[in-house]
Amino acid sequence: MARSPAEAGRAPGPRSAPRTLRNRILAAFLLAMLATSAALVHGLVQLRDIGLALAVLDDGYLPMAEVTARLEAITRQLDREHDQLALEPDGPLGGHRASAALYGASLTDACSDGDRILDRLRPRVRDANEARAIELMVRSLDEIRGAQTAYASAFRAWVDAAETQGERLAARTDELDRRRSELVLRVDGISQLVEGRIGAVSKRAAQAQERALAVGGALSLLAVVLSSLLAGAALLTLRPIGALTEQVQRLAAGERPGPLAVSSNDEVGVLAREFETMVGAVAERDRRLKERASDLDRLRLRLRRVLDTIRAGIVVAEHGHAAVANPAAERMWGVAPGMALPGWLVALAPGRHEAVAHGGHQYDLDIVPFGLHGTLVVGEDVTRRIADRERLARSERLALVGQMLAQITHEVRNPLNAMSLNAELLADELEDDEHRDMLATINQEIRRLETLTGRYLELARGRRAELVATEPLPLVQGVLRVEEEALRRAGVEVALAGAAAPCELDADTLRRALRNLLRNAVEAGARRVGIQIGQDPPGRPPVLWVEVADDGPGMAPDDARQAFDPFYTTKAQGTGLGLAISRQELEDVGGSLACVETSAAGTRFRLRLPMVRLPEGAVDAAEGPGPGGAA
Image (cartoon, rainbow, N blue to C red; front, side, top):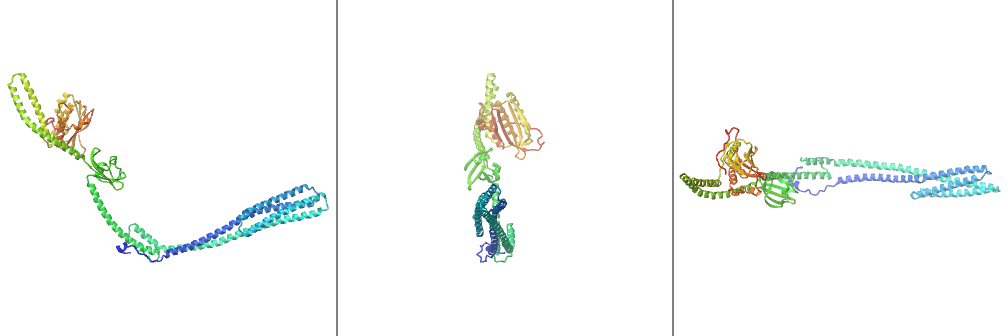
């Protein structure tokens, strides 16, 4: 059993072992089959002979026996009629004449029936003796008809003599007796012939049955003996196959088979030796397969780790279903292995697709053929990248505008301060009220210009978050108290709802953004404003959100998209800087401001501001309306 891997891997060479097992089994099988076939053939031959004999009896001799029985019955009636005629020769002859005609017709009919039976039987007879017997019966029927005809002639002659009372009546009577005796003898002859043939055929059928039983039984017994010998030899010869089968089952179960104690030189021995060679080859193959499987497992694990760590979504699809999908693909598109691809992915043609919008996100996708019927999809979520790029471009634009405005404002504010100071001094020296009113108007316009330049400076300088401990709800209430008078004059009602836990956040930025949104609602002609505050659920980064919704006329889609661009405004007196400055300030501290809904029924803005949660009671008093003007 023990063989080296090199020997196990080599193919076995040709062997010269005689294949005696097959020859022995084949010879024993042929002998048993020959004996069985001989018994079967002999039985079939005997059954054929018996069948032919029975057919001859059923279709020929038994119906002929019925015909002979009819003939005998007719002749017996004829004898009785003849005896009565002899006793009363002077009686009326009309009745005797009618009876003679009836008997003659019956004999003729019976002979005709016998001819038909023999005509049907003649083609089916194979035995020469039976053929001669049938021909003899045919001649006997002809002789009966001839004897009947002769008897009828003699009877008519006797009747003529009896009617004339001639001298030849005695001679006619003797002739009639002789014809009657001849007819009876002919009928008795064919009856004996039929009975003899029935006995002979029955005897031959019985003999054939006895021979069939004897020979068939002997051949069957021989076949049974040969079959038993064959079974015993096969069991004795094939006994090692059981051990070989057990070793094969152990090999199939993954166990290493033991040695086979088979020393014969027949096919079983050759099979056992070849099996041992195969076991060695299988063991060597299993060792190599295990090594390769281990290498493949390591490679698959590395590949899986690589796929799991890649942030881009990777899907290998076959026939519209995902065969491979990494966690990024499942997270972004909800595609897991075995699932059908989403329709929007299936609809994309192979190639590069940039900024494909789906589910509120944008993706850069590369779709290439993979294999015969597969597709490889590699995609990356670029929503944040596009938003950052837009935010950077917007910030660059605002910074550039801010730098320009800062320079202009710096040059303008000094003359404005001097003009304001001189106007105030001049107003103190003038006593004319009309002149004083003119100077007051000049001072009012100078203050408006100072306010405008202040806004430009706010746009120019960036901010850092200044976190202070506060409670969001009182902070919003403080903003409403500051704007209460302006809201009352404009006829605007404000409804505040929601709550938020104490936290640290940039309260000044929140105040200015809220005041800006409230003033925009008043300027848009709103009559009702709803403010809702809240916090993101636990488990997410802590963010305070505030929604401001008004019932104004709303904005057109194009206006809503450009509302946060600097200097874009739809108001006659607006500067287009309020929303731009508010969003820029919120984004500078990590927040956001967006228009989430606009229609003819009003507009809804949502601002989000990062915060740090504080435990309850950390803030002693509600945050009041701190300083800071509207942007």
